[in-house]
Image 1 (cartoon, rainbow, N blue to C red):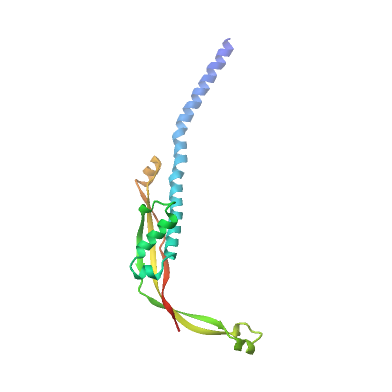
Image 2 (cartoon, rainbow, N blue to C red; image 1 turned 30 degrees about the vertical axis):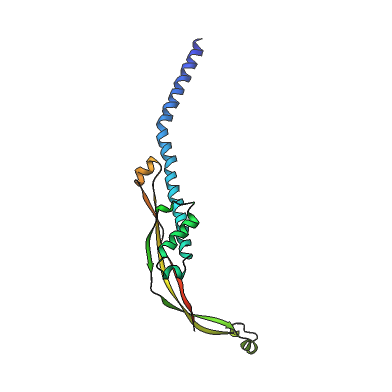
Length: 180
C-alpha cells in the first residue's frame, strides 16, 4: 500500500506542476495567437481597399469628371462593388486631383492594300502611319480606411484605431474625340 500511495502523490505533484506550467505559458500563447488576428485584418483590408480604389478610378467617365461629381462616383463604385466587404462609412478619399484637359498625341497604323502590292514580302511596310490626338484629363485618387483593433494586444500595439492607406492611383479620362 505504501508504494501505491507514493505513486498517487507523485502523479498528483506532476499534475500540479503541469497546471502551473500551463498557467505560465498561457499569456504567451494568447499573445502569439491573437496578434495575427489584427495583422490579418489590416492586410485583408489593405488588399480590398486597393482593389476598391483601382476599380473605382477605372469606372470613372468624363460625365462624372465634367459635372464635378467625381467623389460621388468613386464612393458609389466602392459601395456597389465592395459594400459587402468593407464598411463604406469608414472609407474616405484622402486625395482627389483632376488636371485640366490636355491633348495626347499618338501615331496609329493603317493597313494599305496599295503598299501591300508594292511590298508583298515586307509586312511592316504595308502600313501607313497617321498622326492623331485626343483630349483627356488625369485623375488621381488615394483612399483610406479606418480600422479598429479587435484584440487587447492589437489595441496596445496599434492604438484605438489605425488607417489603411492605398497608393495614389492615376488614370487618364477621355474628354473629346480624335483629332487628325
